[in-house]
Image (cartoon, rainbow, N blue to C red; front, side, top):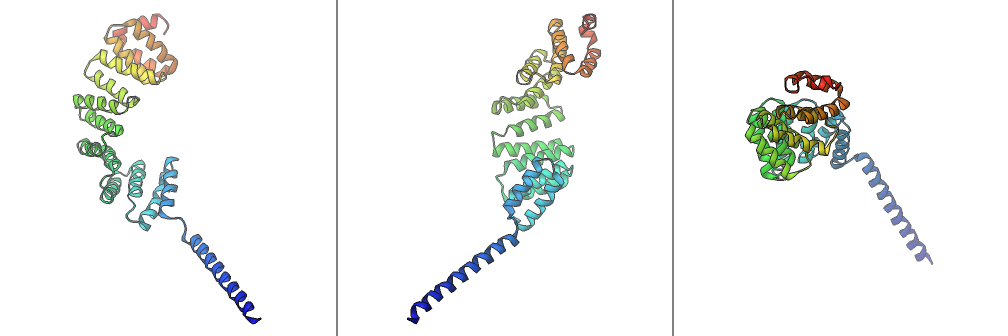
Length: 260
């Protein structure tokens, strides 16, 4: 009769030990805190909400806990860019690339950092590296076009924006900057088409309408220029006032006479 009692007691002891082990593991989990990946995603959320200093501090914790976390290094560099720390950002992006040489975004971000430093030629090299790794990165093409414009390499800029639009036809930034390049090249007709394409996507883009008036003024199309000016004045009266004073020679006094 004693054996069944001993067996029952043994089972009870084993169950108690198992419960204790589970409790110890749970306490260990609570004491461990969030994992590097969990912290990374928390930092990403902070970054998206514009809390760059808080995100930066959290990412430094991540990279201390897990030195091989390439996405964390890249995001840390993005925080440093937002905080206007381009030299430090470049070091973070280069470390991210050391950990993951295929991280095209890090090359693009290095380009942004060099643009902050006013080193457009270095930025161009970085953007080209990003495009080589990811030919569908329309942001890299867009940024490359901006760098070419900064160096007044307008033909290169034009070709790059055209390529950006092949990758992403709805990029209003590429459409707008392409129009600006055509303005600088004094190709008024092509510039007007570029700005019209911006307005098709965003009818409230006052700056595009501003430039469109300039195009029509140079094309001597006063009717179209005044029509766009009227819309611009409704959108942004101050910008419209600035415009009419700068192109009064092209438009004559027609806008003033018509009360626009």
